[in-house]
Amino acid sequence: MRRISAPLFALLMLLAVPGLAGAEDAEEEPAHSPDHSAAAPMADDQAPMADDQAPMAHDHAAMEQEAKGAEAVGVDEHLGEKIPLDTSFVDERGQVLAIGEAITKPTLVLPIFFSCTVTCPIMLANLANAINDVPLEFGQDYGVIAFSFDEEDQPAVALESKGNFTKILREELPREEWRFLTGSEESIRALTGALGFNFKRTGPHMFIHPNVMIALAPDGTIIRYLYGPRFLPFDVGMALTEAAKGTPGLSIRKLLTYCFDYDPESKSYMVRSFRLLALGIVALLGILFFFIVRKK
Image 1 (cartoon, rainbow, N blue to C red):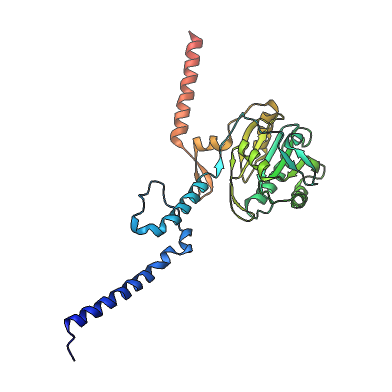
Image 2 (cartoon, rainbow, N blue to C red; image 1 turned 180 degrees about the vertical axis):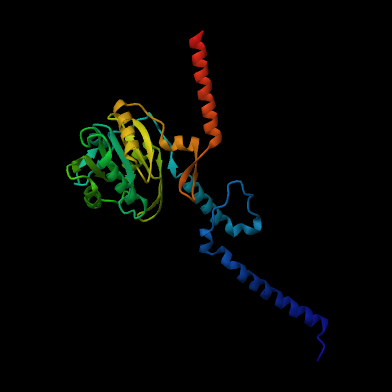
């Protein structure tokens, strides 16, 4: 084998290095592909990216924005506040009305979107079953509104949805007392903002949203939040009774989270023994103090 002179060897190495660098860059390139944007969002307190990772800066900003949007989904309870009763919607028959026209008595308001195939139809069905067993007269003592927070929904799909779910109601119950409304983005944002109902669009007719129903007094005051997807007739009846009085009440979810922990495996609430013990002790001390004062 012939020996390669030093200058020739140096020249060959100089030509080879860029090729190696290009191959290495080619292997790292998929990390910057659009698929990487689907990775889990980075925490806000994570250290800034180094200068040599500059190509990732745009993706990181998008992921951070997406994470902030996801965190905003949920319910901010506005108990005691009023909704804007002059906000315009369209009912299932195509008639334009201010939402206040549909709230002339204690009213249950259920935010959903009609093309949902997951929890929204479950909540509508559960609400229909609850209406059948609520110990109040539907139509006279209270009314119900289901409104879509998808501005692309039209009255035709609202009418179809109404036909599907009012079939669950007992035959003698008035179907006209359950309104199915659609509206513009401006009207939807006005109402959901007043209710503290925060949702996020993830695609055409696709949303991330909380599962909640709100009980309103006849003047539009927010009285109670009932968290779904299941609605118990007793809870619904209690909320409507409070709505008739106009007195806001503590939501069932907040009461449960104080005294109970939710176990996702068993899908049930577990008792917080320490908190219940503390509440018991406080109650016992209150009773003892009452009797001591009364005896004196």
